[in-house]
Image (tube, rainbow, N blue to C red; front, side, top):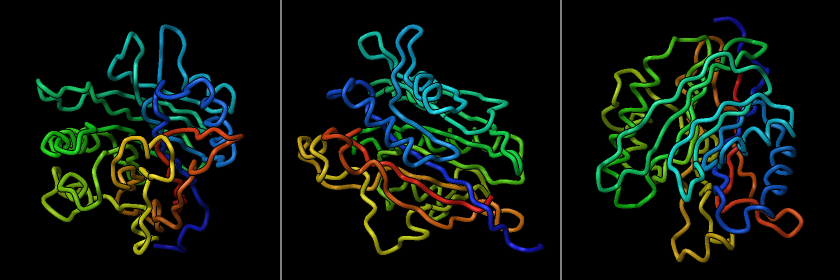
Length: 268
């Protein structure tokens, strides 16, 4: 096997709340938070795009990243989508639609990007699943679509890296399907939950009533956002070393989003 890898990859996943709330005031707080974290790869959900304006592109230009974007639902003429930002070029990308039930179709999508990093290709997937708590049956079908999409991509020396807002608690069937605690949608495709891997006794709430945007919704605290690397490969590639919460404080008096972000360190 050789010596275990000591160099690290920093990954961030964050739902940045589209154009909800004071979105123009929130934009600088989002930018500042991303700059402070300085991740190598960033997976974003609820990224707005209108015409030729795209918030992912604006962030990438300002912070010096490459980016790809996947439009999803359209609200009042403005798209809500997913994006991948990377310190290194994204040489291939693809978008797929996820299952949508006719009476609850939220136009959910997943985006795939092959990041041409300095120590090999990193296959990155970013998604955002149906949001209502009683939609677990829909999310399970979306997770099945997602797993098949991931399995269809070329195998790399780094495991697939799945990030996103799953709108599901760790004990939910849809998360258990991905983490090998129940029947996997694709045989042998199993992911580690980065937060619980290194913080098994901590809550890790990303939907947190300490955030005033969340408190207004009168909902319980939940952990619904994830960084999920696949099973580690040679010399520990993809092994989770650390995982922390970010974006959990106001910037110049403005909370950047209703969700907190996750930041993980992986062997790479």
